[in-house]
Image (tube, rainbow over all chains, first blue to last red; front, side, top):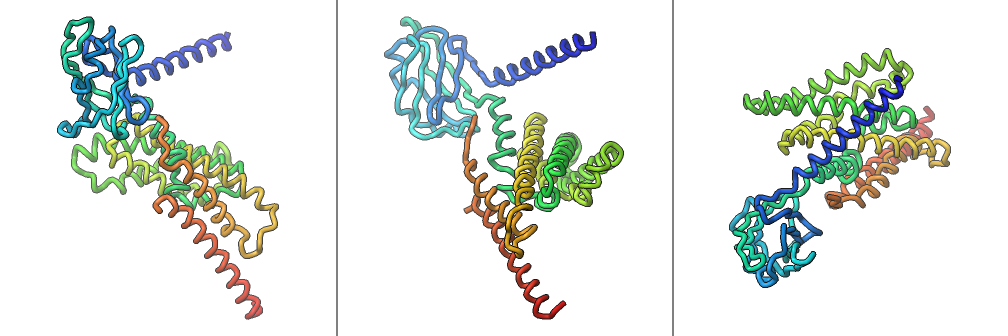
Length: 324
Length: 33
């Protein structure tokens, strides 16, 4: 009976999650014209437009019927090099001379669309990157591409202090992720609804540090009772999380970039998981280094820093990557 | 260069610490303490 209830609850949660993802995905498919079904970015320098019916080839092939520009710069029209007609005249692909900045919304104007010799009117379409893609970009970006430890050189005290044993590293990574998510969401709320409306932006660092210390203190109290062994293995580093650069950097970044709640959540989760990955990788190597024949002057932290440098070099390979 | 800087920072600190350790060991051997 209990198992059946749990299965029901599980399937409802999966359904709710799927609905949420679908909403986020479809939110990006903007079409303001009855004859145009969809307009979306394709590859690095193309825009694909789907029509409800077949358009006339003569109209479609005439580059003069199209105008593409970035929403903030309506005076600067982007050069269209080629128009490709496909799917029995229902799809038009505009190839542009330069690569598109997909983070900026683009406006596409279609002058007097002709279908079966009849005019369907002029369409002004807004092409935006799918919102789920933006969220995933922020998540993967904070986690791997711009990993705070290996690409931004932040949060090193806790990183080197808690990476000697794998179990401690995982414990610290999880604790850190929980603290960063809670404090970043709280910081976003306070920034958007208190600091910004009352022009108290200059207080943000003090407020954010206060918030982080609140959550760290809560974790400290809970962990002391729940898992004393893990609490002891953290030592002074749990309190040091208060002044951790990553934990302060995330609220400052989301305040600077004017992120909304979802984007802030993704940034916080990405930063936390990125730190967890970094800690885990480092702990795996340091456990092996304990048994290796390291020159005496390199034993301990020096070799750990050199390993950190090698990780930073390997993470450099992700830089400039664009997934969505 | 911006992307190489963190790696260079890690390497510099690692090698500097190793040099300090070496000097400290040499100093201890020299003074006999």
